[in-house]
Length: 606
Ligand code: AGP
Image (cartoon, rainbow, N blue to C red; front, side):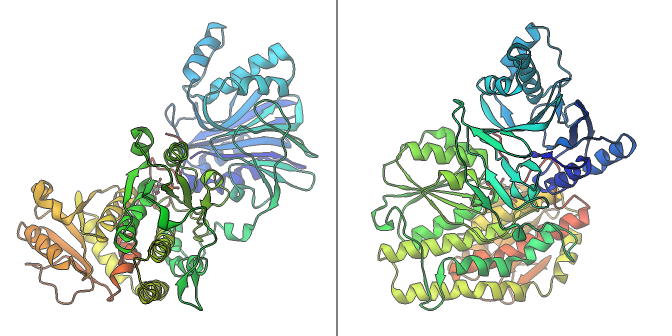
């Protein structure tokens, strides 16, 4: 996901722009740039790769000016080169953009027919030229932007500056997040409050369709029809937006270790510690009346939903359909009105999940959103929001957000069971008690990570890794494979253990480590027989289990000994070893753990 910053400053802005971009690095990017208005003239500096390359350019060719914009680009159209880096500009207009202009090809063709020459392959350059053309015909930058915005299809968050105007910046939002920051004689635009935190905690979030004309003294927000609209100016808690690693080497390591605290924080939002029962604010529906729950999400959030499917079906006896959002949004699934659609998303901005939400809204579903960012688009669109209290998650590989999602989902499954009369009061207290033990269990488990360094030595030499699990551990196997491949770049597959004999077992030989998520639950013996099938074919087995003295048929590569737990909560604790396996292997591989190649923290484009 690209990052945007804009500053109307009282002093030179170049250094502040780059500092703000550093706070947006976690979103993932592969080039960066800034532009300023200096004595009425637009100028820019851009560089491929990380911000240190942009800083090098600025060290030799500094940019002056009190008005400026900046951008970190995650390439969608055109390679991650300097030429395609933002800002894109003409001599009169400079723009940075997060999103995709879906009709940019036709707009580009009509501009080229009018003699406009393009320097890049990006959709964003079309924005700069179109606004410039409108400026030439309308003579006023505000009218030019109003006319241009009407012609764009797709998603955009924009920050735009103009030659000759050093006290004006225009922002626009449709589908991608954009916030206004209010300073003392200064004003800002940013992709999120994290980027703006060093400057201000007074934020105004733009809604879809809004665009704002910003000066150091005031702001005028209009909708797409040009009608002036009011948006709430709020004070945000920037204390949770610390983006330093503390004593940790990587954000991912820090966030793995924050899990006991943030799971406790999340539990405190949904459990009454006095009664030992879950408690939720009034919901716009009753679980008793729901014909079905539909869950849609992407990546790790999807695997959290997959765990929840087992919980809702087993404890609340309610049918659950789940699908990855990129498929669900186009499936045109028939839906009985009055069902519950749950979206799960750390960022609350993932384009596919947002589209799935909007489809279900049209289908008359109640919409519940489990998000980590309460000001996100999904939170705004939902009928009810169940926030996770994970705090800002910087590492691209989701860890604490995942276990906090599981925490909320577990509480919801208990609530649903109570309302549907499918769990007794004592079972509810038993399940809640098991949940309340998890922060301590994770803290204890994290006291000794030495086995993961050694295991990483072996795994880092593998070309392919297989993850297996059954029941509640099947989604964990999928999540483990995703974690491993997304940060170590080793090919890994997660499979239902019972499925192995239907084909994938052909992949197994002595070069393929097989990691088995196997709590000693009602499916353990069946999983063990699958393990013996692969061990007998030479596979190097890694067991993650609370069973003692497990015989897998030959010398296992490792046995990660887990404490015995209530079956209900095993996914929350077993998430920790699979996170550590991926982390230590990636460190061995020397990859960029926090910002793995090609990935963005949140994918706000299709
Ligand atoms: C997980 O480690 C990845 N970063 C990715 O799969 C992520 O979970 C997915 O893109 C969904 O993001 P969201 O939770 O912000 O919607």
